[in-house]
Length: 244
Length: 244
Image 1: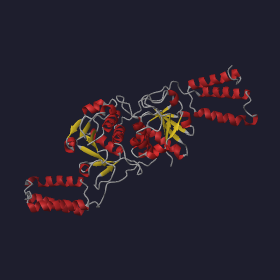
Image 2: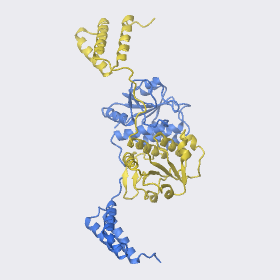
Image 3: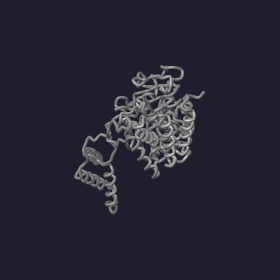
Image 4: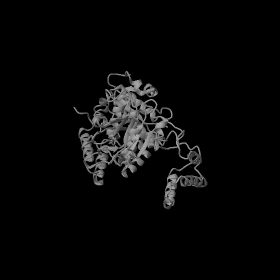
């Protein structure tokens, strides 16, 4: 399956380009286009910042103009932090990438364009885009780092493409305990506590019920019940005395 | 409204801590706790990396141990990139922050714990958490930068809290064109094109209908129609000749 192309317009800092490449690789984007990177290309330190995402950097293409970088795209989205007085659709990253996933599913080429570190995209550059993507940052601190913006687009792309799955799940090494095992645990616990004089006689029923509630909330497995009962038996044998 | 606390365990690089603070500020998180930051605190360069999010750094607290840093929290989530052989719930950031928002709504204090740059959290540290948060990165390149991980949690927090709104919307400086205005535009265009000999007579109807479709797809405003008709009249006056 295709994925959106990332277009960085006049990026300046090696670290931001490298971190953007790394963020792309994290979420399965691979096509990076650089428009007139400031102070030339390749940049010193960019590979270190990419932290191993060198396939993205090695495949990056450099373009003299935005027009050249976007020529083959069918849809261009422009990221911007502020209103441009243009009557464009304004999309959050999730909606933007949902539309991108639809377009890519139809075989379209989609690009997402990011501006310069300090000043973003010019109004003329934004006017080349089909729609604007903006990030739901706070009014108090809206300044999003370039690589962070790329990361959010990559993350939402992966979600929109249906690929945002955890890489592992919690282990379940043992099936949930049967009710019989739970009843046996309650019995062991309540007998031990009664023997230890834990319950005032008039409170025994209510305390026992509360402790059964606690144990139910733990959603114990068969193995958990065995561990618990073994621990109780060890405590009973020792009579609560600390080990010698 | 409260927000999750960010706990960084033995973070090393000033840049990552600063960028994490910036990402927190972007999405309205403000409480940062540092457990035994490597090579001391404060770190040289951290304020520059925070790019103005100094309120987060200035409010950061430093703790000798994880136990101290998490003592007052009601719920602790541990971020990890890999399976730990622990039978914990594994949540993606969106589900984790949805649960955090519910808890915070009930007045609970929620923390999200992030590990060291190279090796993450130890299994013992993960065992202190109520659940695990993991990021839906690719198997091919799963190494997520620390500040990027904090950013994704902050972003999903803001979404879960219902605060993820665009800071601006597309301008609509003029109401949608009336159908009368659209019909007038079609008339102006079709008369001009007929006058210019654009239509083969037998194709006039079909071409005109296709062009009406194109114009409808533009969803024009009243102002757009005026601009368009003015442009057509200018072309008619010039007779298509380039300006002298």
